[in-house]
Length: 271
Image 1 (tube, rainbow, N blue to C red):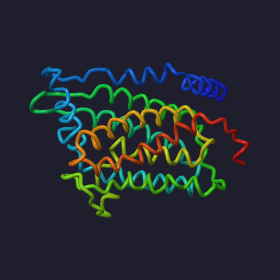
Image 2: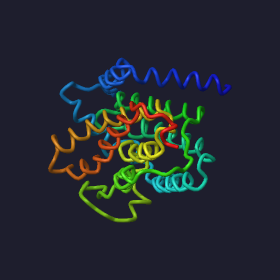
Image 3: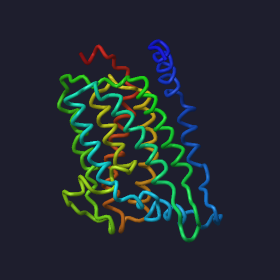
């Protein structure tokens, strides 16, 4: 595909992702019912969702690979600063692949009570994000050329780092600031922990980034952040309040990134 065609498609995507109906469609996708091979009563939806997203999830069957998905993003982030645009496509491909993994590993489980269960709405929404990152790997609109940044733009760094570290005991979800978690826990395969990291990078280089990808990623981040705030702070505050705190980076950076994606800042303003 030649550059003109890529630019034409990118312009179209940026236009479509400004339309209210696209966001409505993404929101409506959240009403896609859960799937279970054994069937489920409406009164059991909450229990089924908890079972799929909890310890029965596929993600908890692959703990041996957790360090891989903590070390690779660290290497890629440092590579951005040193190799710049030579790693743009590699970074986008990695992000896209991880979103595919988030979609399937976090939202599919084989449970004793319900058999195979799928949180279909999450799987669809996160897969849409993955598609936009695969597009970015092809279009390469992200420009990681270093330029002077105002100090206030660095506010995302501690929030993204907190999400990536995810200093919570894996059994109790209570505060646990073990530094080894930076390299060993499951956060590298969590949508809610890695999305703040990816968005932080894009906001730092904004507006020389793929605006359509930034917009869709942050919007889906907002939707899933809302669910987590509801569960952690409203439904189960005694058990999950700290998990709620660790989702604040997802909320704040998603709001910030989504707002940025609609600003009419020209690239010339950043030179």
